Length: 284
Ligand SMILES: NC(=O)c1ccc[n+]([C@@H]2O[C@H](COP(=O)([O-])OP(=O)(O)OC[C@H]3O[C@@H](n4cnc5c(N)ncnc54)[C@H](OP(=O)(O)O)[C@@H]3O)[C@@H](O)[C@H]2O)c1
Image 1: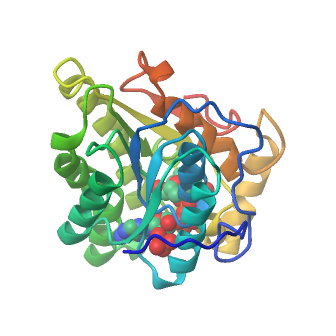
Image 2: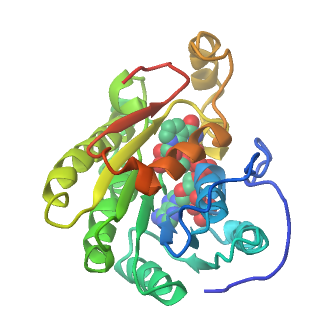
C-alpha cells in the first residue's frame, strides 16, 4: 500500500482510449469528512468515480489489482490530494475476490478518515465476452467472483463500519437487461447485482440507514469496451449511433457525476434503484 505524492493529469486508461477523467466544474464539497472505497479505481469508470468523490471532499481508497495500474493509481491519489479540498487518498493493491484483499481495503479506509466507511462503490469488473458454447466453469467462476461474489462479501465485511447515512453503489450495466450476444455470464452477473440493490435497500434501510443503488452505464469508452472483438464493436455501432441523447459512445465523465449524486445526502430518498446512464439507449 502506498500513498504517493506525485502530481499528474495523465490518462486514466492504460491504452489511451479516453483522457484522465476530470471534474469540469467545481463540485459542491458535500462529501467532506466522508470516506469512500472505490474498487478498481486506477483507470476507466472507477478512476472517474474516485476523482468525482474526491473533488466533493471525500477521502478515497484507490484500489488496483494489476501491476500495470500501479502508477495510474498513484497519480489518481496525487490528483485527489492536489484538489485542495482537504481530502486524503491512498492506493491499495488488492484483488476484490480475495479475503485478504478485501480486508486490506477496509483497513485502509478506516485509517484514512474518521474510522467509518461512508461510501462503498463496487466498480471493479470483468467484461470478457464468450458465446454460450465457449463458456467453461473456470470462466464462469472468474467472472462471477469479480462481478457478483466480491460485492457481496466486501459489503458484508464493510457493514459493521458503515454508519447511518451510508451509501453502497454498484456499477452494473445495461447489459443486465439487453440480451447482447456473448454476455451470458456477464449479463447474469450484472442482473444479479441489480437484485442485490433491491434486497439490500430493504435489509439495510430502516435498520441501518444505508441506501443501495445501481448505476447502469451503456457502452463507455474504456479499456473494457475496446478489449471487445472488433465484430462486437461493429455490431454495436448502429445502436450507439441511435443513442437518443447524442450519437456517440458514453464517456467516463457521463457516469461519474451520477455516482457523486448517489453518494451525497441529497440522494437520501433513492434506494433500491437502477439508474440507467446510457444516454437513453435503455430507459430503465
Ligand atoms: N466500459 C463499458 O462499456 C461498461 C459498460 C457498462 C458497465 N461497465 C462496468 O463498469 C465497471 C468499470 O468498467 P470499465 O469500463 O472502467 O473497465 P476497465 O477499464 O476494464 O477497468 C476494469 C477495472 O476493474 C478492476 N478489476 C478487475 N478485476 C479486479 C479485481 N479482481 N480486483 C480489483 N479490481 C479489479 C481493474 O483493475 P486494474 O486496473 O488493477 O486491472 C480496473 O480498474 C465494471 O463493473 C463494468 O462491468 C462498463
